[in-house]
Structure formats: structure tokens, C-alpha cells
Length: 115
Length: 111
Image 1 (cartoon, rainbow over the protein chains, first blue to last red):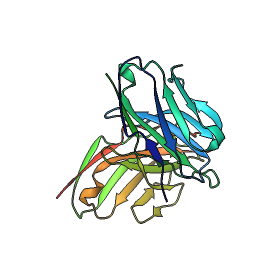
Image 2: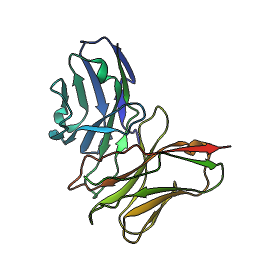
Image 3: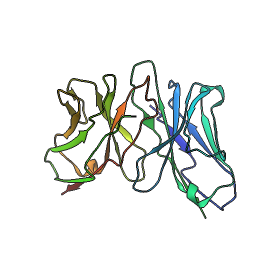
């Protein structure tokens, strides 16, 4: 079990720069989620994919955020023109829908710091 | 989306049982109760889930009230490694795919 992996673990960028994060889910999982978490808060839903289709996107997600999952495997999350308020932990999770209510498996996140 | 209510923090002593409560009075008939925990600087980790009946696994037990409006996560013998934030979440793969997370319960374990 290789688990969900995220890259990079940490990213420091200057305000206004673009950043891209990568998530590799568990190979047989068809659902992939992106969450954002700030200190002392629970994870906040951003978006999710079933295979390569992006099925839901949070209304809180601005147009500066975009996510892709080409070929239904790995996923990328891009933030354009970063702002200091984007500083957070970005979490990726995957699950399998073959069984109802299969639990989510999370990666250890990418911590973004915008200076 | 149905919400859950948990105490902000709890404290336990090592090797003693811990009962973490969760209220979910607006739960629907098809919502599963999921528990996750998060250690510092790590992503959340799945602990256990159930629908109506009590559940046991190697990590913990889940006791679900008969009316399903509350549940309790039971750690039978707390260890220092169990110190984490524990989240109780209602999940329905068909209708509530995104999982709404609250603030969870921060569990401290004293040696």
C-alpha cells in the first residue's frame, strides 16, 4: 500500500507567483478530493473528481484556483497570482466508490506559505 | 449538509479508556458516521465508520445511539500516540460526497 502522496511537502512563494501541487492517489481509487486546511480549523472542501471528471467545486474557490486530473490518475492543483490568504495546508484524498461509503485516504499535504 | 458537534478538547491518562462523544441530531437515514484523526503535521487518518450497529476494529470501537443522533468513539487503552484531533463526520457517498468537517476534539494523553 503506497498510500496517497503529495508533492512538494512545503512550498514558499512570493505574492503574485503561480504555484502547482501534485497528488498521486492510491492506484485503484477513482475519486480524488482536494481540501484546504488552516491552523486550528478542520479541512475545507475545494473540489473533487470521479475518474477524470471534476464533479463538484466549492463556491469558495476563486477563479485563481484550477484543478485537473488527466486520464483519471494523478491530479494537479494550480493557484495563480497567489495571495497571503492562500497560505494553508493543501490536502489531497482518494477513495473507491465500489463499496458504499468507502473511507477517504489522505496524503500528508502540501504546506504553502505566501510571503 | 448535516453537521456534527464535538467538545473542543479532552484529556486522558495513558492506558486508560477514552470516550469521545459526537452529536449529530440532524443525521439522515442514509448518513454514515465516520471518524478520522489527525496528528500534527500529517493528513487525517481514517479510524472507523458505522451506520446503525456498533463497530469494532483494531484501532477503536464506535458506539452508535439507538436513535442515531449521537455516537461515541472509544479508544480502549490510550497511548501517547493517540494524542491527536479527532473528527466526527457524517458521510453519504450518494448525497454528501464532500465531507463537511468541524473543528474536532483535540485529545491530550498524559503519561
